[in-house]
Length: 408
Image 1 (cartoon, helix red, strand yellow):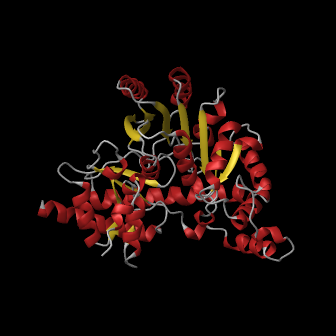
Image 2 (cartoon, helix red, strand yellow; image 1 turned 90 degrees about the horizontal axis):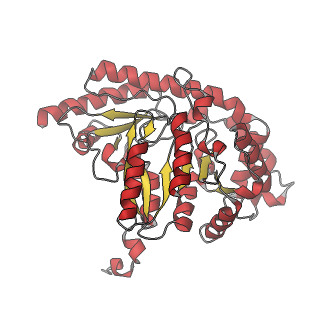
Image 3 (cartoon, helix red, strand yellow; image 1 turned 90 degrees about the vertical axis):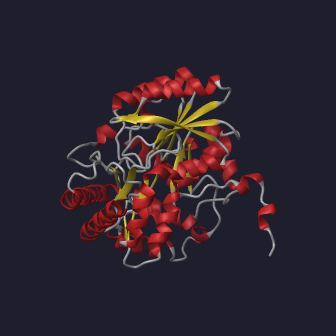
């Protein structure tokens, strides 16, 4: 047998897999598996009829460029539509400050390629989104965690960690965070902290990577559109690189996201993107543009908020009924996730093994921590399963916990 490992580059030898992707693969192996793992949108909310109409018109053949190569930076009318979307979020930009990406995940990857030198310290929350962990590790960054509080990242710890890393001789240029209904915790960064973060970034000469996939999905009992105001809206000094996506509000299969950054950085991202995929799919971009142009996204948003709030409520009720007080969690104010703390003595990986036997899957909490901790936490996604499947999955999770206690 050929030993292919010897052919790998140093980067190829240290590629970091996403724990969420791995759990999603496990879930797909069994039709009866209840998946609380991947943060997939509910497919019943996809606007199938509208998408069929858009597709039929685009594929009529009247415009031959629909299926042709396009600009790396993106379909110009879509970029202009995104500028309008951003204006609705009180972010004022020009088209030169926007580039389309193949999902916001590619935006994180481009940030790593363009702005991270191997060995740089990239600051992330404890816990942090595993896709960002993978992207920055694959860029050979040293990921350094910063504690969270109930209203988001701990600013005192952030400054202490930044200063500590710089005293140790490491370059610290980037802070990555998800302010709105953070993945995995569901926490909402307070408006007061957002302003202080901008001041901190200027004082410490750091760029903030603001990832905002869930901002439109706030729950009306605990949050509002004003609570999700992006930091980029108040960034007067060019400190924030803003990422967002249509995956959670339209459909993830289109893989259309975007990056907002100063024009000089957007040019660098565009050049890096040329070597990755040349361009995001033209047809996908055209469909998304039609959805924005005709106001479909605006019409969908209230229903999506109601749908996911109902699912959050169903999961919380089921957890209380099936598990009593054995799990605790901060109530999600929006987004897709519930972040649960396990009882004393219960380990996330051991519980996951038992859960798979019961045909329910989640993501181990330790996957989100860059410091090796988090084994007393699990992330439960309520977005994709139906209310009935949520109840069944929680029943199975309770069985796994009972088996774990008996066998521990």
